[in-house]
Length: 64
Image (tube, rainbow, N blue to C red; front, side, top):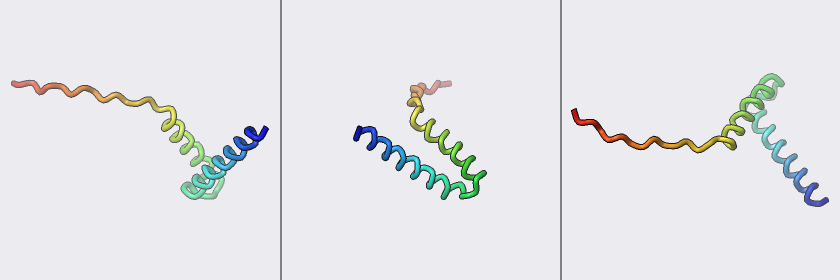
């Protein structure tokens, strides 16, 4: 039960920190906060779920 409580506190802390950062970056007005929250959440999701991009192999220059 202590593990569940600890996870709950950590997730609450992370959500509060994220919300404060969004509020300071996008403004405290509801519309700015809502749109900023969605935008930043997409950015975080893309960062976490992003597949590593493969670098194409360099091609040898063609002599003309």
